[in-house]
Length: 167
Image 1 (tube, rainbow, N blue to C red):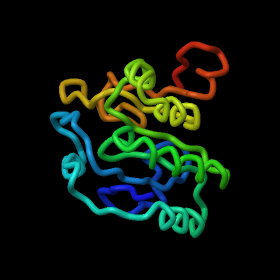
Image 2 (cartoon, helix red, strand yellow):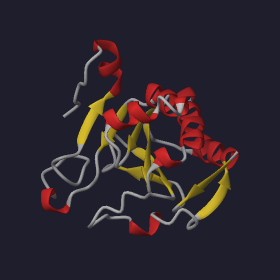
Image 3 (tube, rainbow, N blue to C red):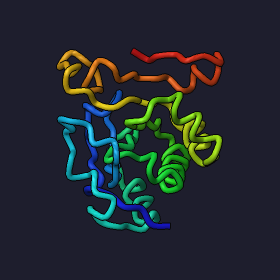
Image 4 (cartoon, one colour):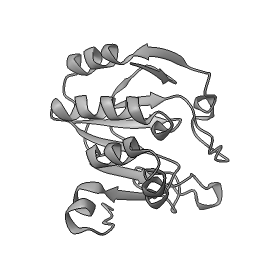
């Protein structure tokens, strides 16, 4: 399986989730948020293709990381690849976070027609959802760019059957 990425994997991030993480930068996004910090990742034909097995090898070579973050672009535009990467990272003991411009509720609706999205959500630990909104930009937001975005604890959400925010 191939995946289209916007950049090489980025280890040692401390701003894309709790702990020391590696970020996978997915290519492709149609949200087109004004002020996006990664607009070069929007073009669905941009970036580069890589075999998912090569990502597994990079994950295997990581040291001193406790998590993996899916970002972009938007990983939910490549849900099959995002799911496989997530499952592999989880098998290695990583917690997995994902950013998306979709809301959690919208992803649940979309998953009615695309069950891979539901499976991806079921394998993630944390979801940062919602479009970046320039007029709600705040440097006081932990792990997100604007105050409308939510950091959802998906493990507790599944456990309690209701939306639980991490922060």
